[in-house]
Amino acid sequence: MRPEFIELRNHPDVSVLIIGGGINGIGLFNELSLQGIDVVLVDKADFCSGTSAAMTRIIHGGLRYLENAELRLVREALQERNRLLKNAPHYVKPMPTTIPIFNWMSGIIPGIRNLLNWPTKPGNRGALMIKTGLTLYDFLAGRESPLPKHLFRTGWAARALRPALNPGVICTATYYDAKITYPERLCLELVQDAEAAYPQAHAMNYVRMISAKGGVVVLHDEISGETCEVKPKIVVNAAGPWIDGANKTIGRESQFIGGTKGSHIVLDHPELVAATGDDMIYFVNRDGRICIFYVVGGKVIAGATDIPTSDPDAVCDEGEVDYLLDSMSQAFPSIKVDRSHVVFRICGVRPLPLSNALTPGQISRDHSFPVLPAGNGIEFPIYSLVGGKWTTYRALAEQVANEILRVLGRARVRSSADIPIGGGKGYPRLPQGTGLSQERLLILQERYGATADRVAAYMKAGLDEPLVYHAGYSRREIEYIALNERVVHLDDLIMRRTLIGILGELTMPLLKELAVVVSYVLLWPEQKTTAEIERTIQLFKKVHGVILAA
Ligand SMILES: Cc1cc2nc3c(=O)[nH]c(=O)nc-3n(C[C@H](O)[C@H](O)[C@H](O)COP(=O)(O)OP(=O)(O)OC[C@H]3O[C@@H](n4cnc5c(N)ncnc54)[C@H](O)[C@@H]3O)c2cc1C
Image (cartoon, rainbow, N blue to C red):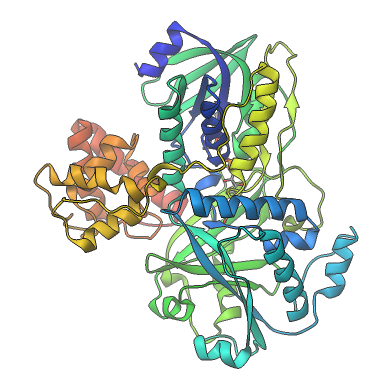
């Protein structure tokens, strides 16, 4: 039995139970542990495997939200962006963002109508409108912003930098936001930091909340099949797009979520990589929707769609792939992009508030945490974390924690605002005396931040060699991850501890090689190893549009 289950069976009373280990649940878990609150977090799958893994991977203020006059949200998001650049410098890096602009004046009338609260479908945004928006964006980022201010280039100067740019572009605007290289790893670091900060904080992946009655919530270990009862004073439902379903499981009806699905495709296309350069390209598609693409690990990630859905498990469909492929031609019409370049698809459902906005893009991305008070046979209140952005997780966590502290009659003891996260502590320290090459150390630093010294020490402590089917990783590096990073299934390693999955680098021989390394250190019997390989093959086929051939 899991040690956490043994402890919960002996001491079932906890102050807070969090259902859902996406960024919002984990952010709150971290925040509460800092305040010395005993808290248990469970996720039915791996940490950060729901919507939080399907993000565009930008840490941003949300330039687009200015059109909806959401100044408070943009200001808050920019502050959190600036904090993440400081607290997680190993994973959150400045990223220039370039907007190709096709005319001077358009978008002003719809913009004014939206500001006056007469919702209008947005269309093309001209130079004047974008200039106004970026000036305000720079202002809202505040003096403490570590990023440069925006600049405009004439069409000629922009094409000199990017010859493939659409000839119809009259000028470009470049402003700065940030990219996050490993959102899933940052979530894991927040979990590990929280457990290190307070011994009564426990997070479990692959544990599902399955029912509740009176003051008791029943948890189910998805691996062993065992169950365990918890008696929380407060429940936080951080189940993202599954929120209403989770409330129903507890025995409380809610209609908080009006989800929209968002898909990205990953393209293996060297010409597109060269044309894109270091910037994120941010443009308005023919239907008025914002699309983006940028380069990650030598591939281009393009997205995202925004389609209402009631299915929290939605996957990227063929229509979305067509839409995203077609949208690329808006920016670089001379570069041919088709399905043969698509190496991976990923989809997530935004847990947005139920809304009657004219278009999905106009639904507010702000967060809220409505409460279902104790009642209907349930003895604890349930706070549901609705909406929000990855970027603003800490602000949401701080606000919810303040409310929880008030209800528990406890005082805040610490702010999370300036605490470095995981391998951000001591970054950019490079491991010393390992005997590894400078090139290898820099790769480890990019993957693990300052924690690279622990990884390097493990690699040095035994015979090591590069993987046969992925020379970018070594056998002992994979062993380190499997042993230290809460890997339960093979796809945790492939999809969330490394970028192997999302970059479309997984092949059948590599999958088998990884299975051998992981099964060796996690002592998996042969049957389990075979089942794990099959699980990954099916996941890649059904969810990510990848057929792994023998
Ligand atoms: C396509 C797309 C692009 C985006 N891009 C960005 C971006 O670039 N920047 C940004 O800031 N934001 C972005 N967002 C928004 C951001 O990703 C989400 O707002 C955020 O990830 C929501 O996190 P969450 O923790 O609320 O939900 P989730 O990450 O979905 O977490 C919910 C968790 O609850 C678990 N769960 C559900 N039911 C149960 C149960 N019964 N028991 C136990 N566990 C359960 C699930 O397994 C899941 O892990 C994007 C969203 C999408 C869809």
